[in-house]
Length: 576
Ligand code: DON
Image 1 (cartoon, rainbow, N blue to C red):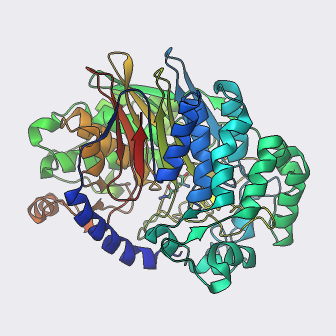
Image 2: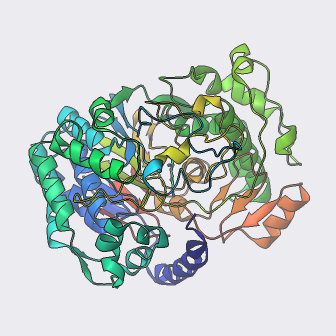
């Protein structure tokens, strides 16, 4: 994986950013009516422009999504997939699943060699790593069903950005040096100017992408059923990939019931399978609800210990049970039951870490026993790469949380020839082999084995929180498995520690994912605290900064929109 460079460079960049940020306000951005938070100011502004033109939050989210495909090719995409969670001002909720699907020719062992070992990088880089993209279908579906403006109007900002270009930030120009992009001539030509790399501040124009966006604006169906579908399939097959025009034609967006829970009286609405995010989040919160975290103190050793123990347990269940609900029965109701959370809680020793390998699931539900299967081997966790989240609230109070991904930074690194957009490597989110960790160190069970037409398990966690029945928080992040714990860290920051949304987004994060059996911590957690955690039997590992919370809160008193873009990155919350 191309992650070494980033592991070393990113902490440096962030340290520099942190210096700037010290002088910058640490308050959220305030606006009376509407807000968009995303990882790129121009994408946030695209959403804002659409709301100022009379569009609602769904129009704005789709405009921001297409704009991210232009200004943030690391993760914004046409060639990937995502989840859109909507809560309308009237209180109805909708979850649009446009996760990628495995092509019809995919097989359970397609990434194994003759000896049955996982072939390195086969599910990560190149044509065979690509899943059937869902993003265009999902955004078109969401906009047509829940938006107000003509679709072409919503796409206009992205088309302009691709056509006219935009100045590259230092970090974005730097990331375009990705050596895996160099392996694919079309990617090298477009994103690396054939070796004459873009520099910070240079204008990056993407004429092929502008043309593709114009074609989608005029005929949104073209991507899946028209000439464009045939062009995409031909480009993938030329490189040895499996996706056919039939796979594109068969792609289906699914509306699913979001998962729901409560935490200390707040209502949590989040992502259902094929994401593990909402279930794991609610499971963690159910366990934590039994502790007075505020009493222990924000980022105290006791609070980190208990929270990490909740994370550990939810990730065990994630590995055992979760996958595509269209192919496997997922015991959702049991996993998010408060009784189950309480049973897990009683296995937590307040003073000592529970070694992951000795953890036994509480036997209170037979359904869970029936599905349990895993005998995993841990291994070191590589640095997660890229995905992106954005949040929108409009003047009427409609709210949208979208997380979208190519999986890795720049996905498979393959650009669809002549069409100017990158294709995902989402096939790595399947279990290439049972019990063997994927790129994020995640162990996955049989529910997440590769199969034709199946959606790989995700950790993306677009989440909406209500207080007294009213919209309160719109949350989400990138970060692979750390998405789930990032959202939990932010939510607990607001609810338990009384932080405002910007403080909660900025606060140092910690993460545990069952295996490897370690608490990963960002800089900013004190060495004394880490020593106390070590004394409780935890292994702690300090890492650089991770994830990217792009969140919005609503002030319950004034109804103001409070936008919080993560201090760790270059994003921006903008409102009016
Ligand atoms: O869907 C998932 O869970 C992963 N493909 C997300 C990858 C990710 O967030 C990488 N981000 N930093």
